[in-house]
Length: 176
Image (cartoon, rainbow, N blue to C red):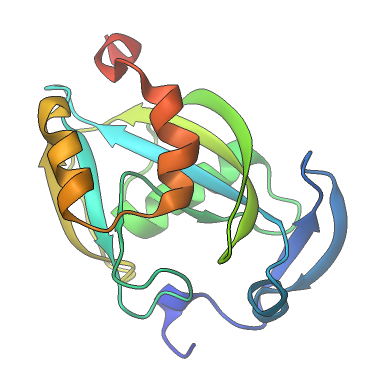
């Protein structure tokens, strides 16, 4: 975990219950090793043409390295409000600031790799983007009609699919 895109092993994060109530503060390394539930933010990015930004994660990520994702985001810092965490992640991962976001809701997710509670957002931005922190190694705009083909052809992160796809519906209507 020497690469910054994987997150610092000694970074502090909040362990939370399924409702998002903070139980204690632990290191990121402990959270990953013990698969502790934590807070995260997910931000779906669409452009003015209604295309969805999908990206491939760095091979150095501490969970699902090299996987494809339909959103940007990450682990919330200790005491960080949802919106502030989303704004920070947009700045770190896409190099953008100052965009309005629509809260799609919050939800819990759990599988053999992770347990989390996430706030899910939608925003409209045409770019340009800067992937300076190294967390994203490839990105593409995808037409809504082509999304299913992308999902079937590549390995996408299950947490964002589970929490975001049901909330997106017709995302063109959300940004109109």
